[in-house]
Image 1 (cartoon, helix red, strand yellow):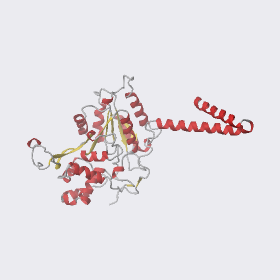
Image 2 (cartoon, one colour):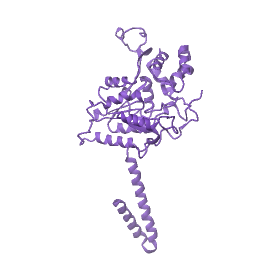
Image 3 (cartoon, helix red, strand yellow):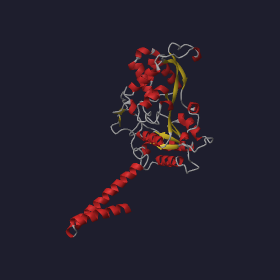
Image 4 (cartoon, one colour):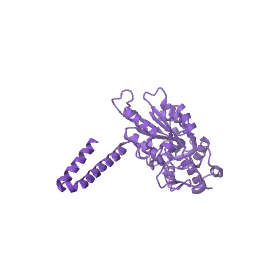
Length: 372
C-alpha cells in the first residue's frame, strides 16, 4: 500500500509540474486514481500468478491448500521435522480416474481393445475375443480377466507396434464428450499439480492398471509428458519375448541379437492393481513414496504403502472423488466417500468443488454417455 501511495504521489507531482494546478486539479486527481488502479490491478494479478495450484483449482480448495503447505514444509531445509531431500521426494499417481477420466464408458485401454477387435483388426483376433469385446458395456469390471483378453488380442504384435497403435487410437474421438479425443481426457487440475510437484524437485511415477506399453504411449502424448519419463511408468504386465522364441519356456534358452524384435506372446503376467501396486513400487522404485494419488479401492495398497509408519518421512495420500455429474460423468456420493477416505487416513478431493475447470473449455459433456 505504501508503495502504491508513493507511485501515486510521483504521478501527481509530474502532472502538476507540466500542467500547473488550479483548473487542472480535477484532471490530476483522475490521473492519480488511474495510476493507483493500475498498480492495484498489477499487484492482484501478480499475487494470483504466484499462488501455486490456482489456475484450475478452486480458490477455496482445502486439498490444494494442504498440498501447498506440505510442499513448502518438505522443501524447506530449515524445517528439520519435515524436510525431504530431493532424491527422496517420490510422488506416485494412478492414471485412470486420477490423472485422466474413467468414470464413463470412455476408458482408454478398454475402448482401445474394443476398437482393435471389432473395427481396426478383426482379422487378427478370434471370434471369442470379438464376442468378449462386443459384450463390454458401461458398468463392466476392468479386472484381471479382461487384461488376459488384452494379452490374447495383442499376441504377435511387437512392443513398438502396440505403442504406435495406442498413439493412433488416442486421436480418435469419444462419444461421451463433444470435442474430445481419447488422449484429451487429462484433468487439467491434476496436470497443474504434476507440474507443480516436478518444479519443486519431486520425481513423478505413474502407477497404472493399464498395460505398461499403452500407459507409456498415453503419457508420452499427454500434457504431463515433460514431467514423467518412460522409465517412471509402472503398469499391467503382458508377457514379452524375442520374436521366434514365443514358445520357448525360458528366456535363458536364447539370446537377443542385433535386429531382433520383442513381441507379445499372448501370455499374461500381472494386473497392476491392489497389492500389486505396492509390490511393484518396491521392486521398481525401491523406496516408499511420500505422496500418493488415487481414485478407487484398487489404489489403497499404494496409498497405504506410502502412509506406512515405517516411512522415514511425513507422507500424504489423496483420493479423487468423481462427484461431478454436470461437467463429468461422476456419480460418487461425496458425503459417503469423503468420510470413508478420511477414516482411512486419505485426503479426499472433490472434482465438483475443488476443480474450477476439468477439461479444455471446448470439451463438453455429451447428452448421453454412450451410443450403441
